[in-house]
Image (tube, rainbow, N blue to C red):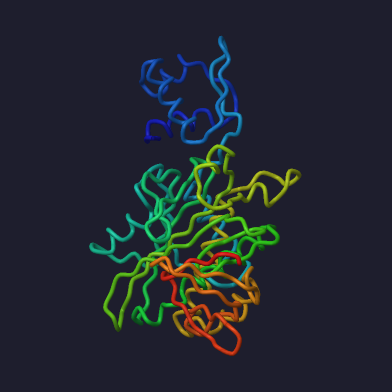
Length: 334
C-alpha cells in the first residue's frame, strides 16, 4: 500500500533520473532499507521502477502528479474560452480510502457543492454494486464532485447517464476517439471498459439532495493489473495510440470538471430529457440484441430500444417493451 511517505519518494523520482538510495534516504529522513521497502510497495502499486547497482533508482514511466493549482489554472482558461465561470474548488490528496466516501463524510459537516476531490491512490475505491475499483498510482484518474440539487432522488434517476455524456464529451475534446457508453454507468472503447461512474445521494425524498459524483478512468493500466479485473478493460493511453503525446492528467481533469459543471447545471433545470438522444447515440449497444442479468440471477433478453426520459433502459421483445432501472441489472452482450 502506498503511503504519503511513498508519494514523497516518488515525487523525488518524478524527474525520470537515477537517484541513489542514500540520496533518497537523506531527503525523506529514512534508512536506505526503509527506502527500498517503500519503493517495492510502489512497484506493487503498479509503478515501473528500474534499479541499477551503483546508480540507484529511477521511474521508467514517471507519473505526472496531480496538482490542484494546475487544474484550477486550466479551468480558468476554459472559463475564458467559453465565457462561463466555473465555481469549483479543486483538492488533490495523495491517499484516501475513496474520494466519494470522503465527500459523503463531509456532507454531514458542511456544504460540498462544487467541491472536486481527486486522489492519486485510493485504498478502498468503490465501483457499482459494491465492487472494488482497481486503480494504479499515477496511472488512473479518480475523483469525485459534490453537487446540490433542489429536487429529490426521483428527479436524479438519469443523472449517471447524463454524467456519462459529460465524460465522453470531455474525452473527445481532449482528442480521444471511439469512446462510447454502456448502460448504466460504464465508459468503454470497443466494448472494453475504460472508466466508470458512481453516484451517491444524501437528502430527503422530495429534496433537496446532495450528490457525490465519482468518476474513475484508466489512464495507464499495466497488463498485470488487467488480469485482476473481471471484465475486459483498456486504458486511455491505448486508446490514444503509440504516437500520441503523454496524457496530461491535470489538463484532462480540468476538462472533465468543466464539462461536468455545464451538464449538471442543465440537469438541475431540465432533468435527463435534454441528454437522452445524445446518450442513445453514444450507447454502444443501442438497437442490439442483449441479455440482461438481474441481481437475483434471472435473465431477460431483447433488443435495446433506448432509454426513457428518466434514464431507465427500454428493452424490446417483439411488440412488448419493458423498462429497467439503474442499479438493478447488469448489461451483457447477447
